[in-house]
Amino acid sequence: MLKLARFLKNGLIKYGVVEGENIVEIEGSIFGDFKKTSVKRKLDEVKPLAPCEPSKIVAIGLNYKAHAAEFSKPLPEEPMLFLKPSTAVIGTGDDIVYPSHMSRRVDYEGELAIVIGKKAHMIKKEDAKEYILGYTCINDVTARDLQGKDIQYTRAKGFDTFAPIGPCIETDLNQEDVRIETYLNGEKRQDTSTCDMIFDVYHLLSFISCVMTLNSGDVIATGTPSGVGKMKHGDRIEIRIQGIGSLVNTVSSK
Ligand code: MG
Image (cartoon, rainbow, N blue to C red):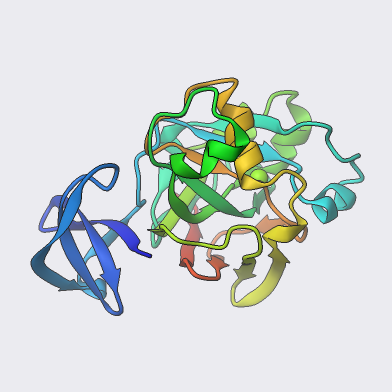
C-alpha cells in the first residue's frame, strides 16, 4: 500500500512516496522497479504535479444510476466513452481556467480515476487488476452549455486545465466501495460510494482495452455521481476520495 506522488523541487521533476507529512524521493520508475532513497522532503515544501502524464484520458459518461436519473437519461447498455486531451491535465493546487470566451456554464464532476500500470490490449475482466497501478482523483471539468450544443464532447471536455488529477496514486484501494465527495467552497455537493457504479472498474478497463491500447500512465475517469453543478471565478473545488486524499483547485479567469 503506497501513495505515489510526482512533484517539482528546485526546477526538477521528481517522484516519491508520501509518508505522513513527508515525501520520500524514489529512484527508478513508478511503472517498473523503484526504490526509496534517503532524500525526504516536507510535503508543503514541494510543488505537487499531476501524479502521472497520461497519453490520453478515457472518460465514461453516465456510470452512476443517480447521475443518469438527474439528467433524465436511460441507463446505458454499454460504457459510453469519450476522450480528454493530455493538454488538459493539471495538478492539485493549479488553477482551472474558465474559458469565458466560449462558455457561460462550467461544471465540476468529481470522479475516481484509474491509473494504468502497463500496456493493456484486449484484456479480460478477470485479468484487469494486474494492469492497474492504482487510483487517484480526477475532476472531469465540463463546459455544460457546449456539451448540450455540440454532438461531440471534445470541446466541452477538452479545454486546457479541464483535467485536474491528483494528489497522489494510491496503489491499494477497495475500489468497489469507496466514498467520493465533492466540496464547492467547503460545501458538500457530491457524496456517493463507487458501489453505485453501473460498470465497475475492471469491466471498464477490459471494455476500453478492446477498443484502444492503454499505455502505462493513461487515466480512466470512471464517471461522476449525482450532484454535479456549476463553478464560477474564485470558487475552490475539492474532490475527496477516501484512502487517496484531496484534489483541490481554484477557478480563475486566466
Ligand atoms: Mg464525467
